[in-house]
Amino acid sequence: MKSAYPYLNFNGNTEEVFNFYEKVFGVENSFKLRYGDMDDKTMPIDEKDQNKIAHVTLPLGNTNLMGSDVLEAFGPPVSLGNNFSITLAPDSADEAEKVFKGLSEGGKVLMPLQKEFWAEKYGMCVDKFGVQWMINYEGNVEL
Image (tube, rainbow, N blue to C red; front, top):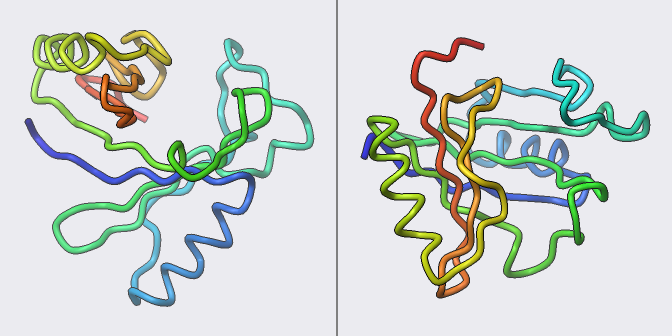
């Protein structure tokens, strides 16, 4: 496994939260993507959500704190218990498949492991103990 990252979800105030964390930790985010910046026709975004945060990364020591706004169109609002995930960055596509299969067994697949514009393999699941996971194997994808 290459790495694991905490991933926080919010109901529209991710930018405010990460601006606060920047001040607290004395670092600047290294990547910020708004939903309006995405050129992905498979996931149309409502006009009112275009300026919300699709993904932000804040470097902390040897890891990153990441986050996003969860849009109404994606499902129920964020609440205590579904407001974070652990993101895994496997070393290979095979490892991504193996880990995703293992974690989702007896749990629930939220998004099947599939190709996305940012990753060769990406999927989301909740394990049988209620922990949310995101598997993100970038492979040869370049943003």
